[in-house]
Image (cartoon, rainbow, N blue to C red):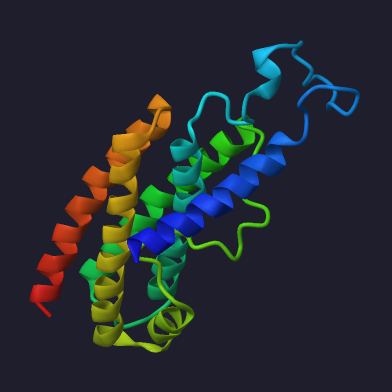
Length: 199
């Protein structure tokens, strides 16, 4: 599973970097303000201050975080949910939306975007359409339990992705964010497991 995901991700990233690298690499077709002279600088990737591992991590973690926010919004729209789970969903949303904004800013700085990434696999722990439908349909205590079970799996996938970035990344800002994700989401996993044990 992990090998298949990694291969798919690598292929998708290679295609993105190749397409992005085809624009603004010197010559008369360069974008205004993007011709920085000849030599090595004209062959740099659009993410010149980021490795392929950094770019892949950001492009995978943005939709991963977006789904966590969507799951939290779904839970917060319900009534009869355990108040401790409501507080956790609010905490997850408050932490992950600013991280999404930060990562999207990095992509803009690197001259890249998430356009065309809709069909790409976005990392371990992602919920399927049927998983999301089940959460949407659940109510009360059932919704509380299901949210915790799904979010534990979701967080484990994020931790695995972030640890890979810590081990392989190059950009210090991206690696620092990955470390934060590992620490904060491991703590939230422990909290969710404790909550599940009381239900």
